[in-house]
Image 1: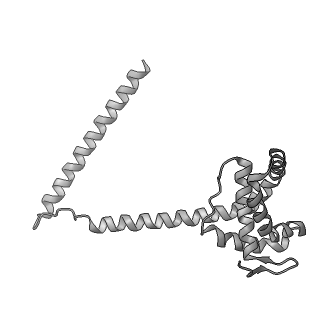
Image 2: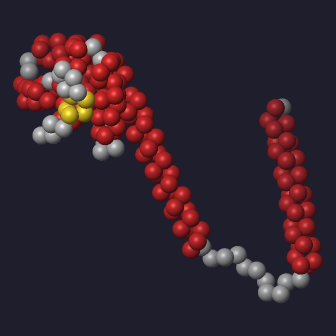
Image 3: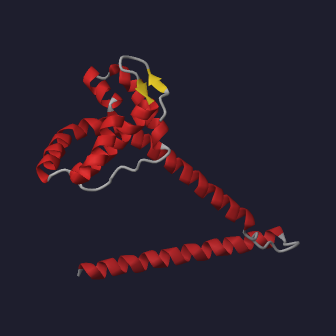
Length: 182
């Protein structure tokens, strides 16, 4: 148990309470929706703690107590959920369905920030991989002692051939489009 205080106040918010609240929201969202759409990762937890700690003093006292009591509520729900009769379970789901939008309102900025950080990290990894591949790729062949004028003439001929090819392909495409209109 981590009783490190994230935010002072009556009642004080602890790391344990913040983590349990995150797990409660995760469980409630999955139960109400019928599927698990929230990915609680190690990147999300510290962002959630910081977000909740900054928002906590501005929350109504009832909401503060909900977050502080989250560890006990989570333990109770996890222990009793499989054994609840259908009517009690249905009543809880109806109540949670009404409360879920406010819970997700608190969680959405955290999930968006975590997703952006993960995307940035995967982009950095992809760029590093591409740089490594480029560095290890064989270099283009350069003819030793090539005459610069001859090389320029060769490149000009290539450019002209590509231009002619492009013009022919454009003409063919337009011809096919006109044939389809008929």
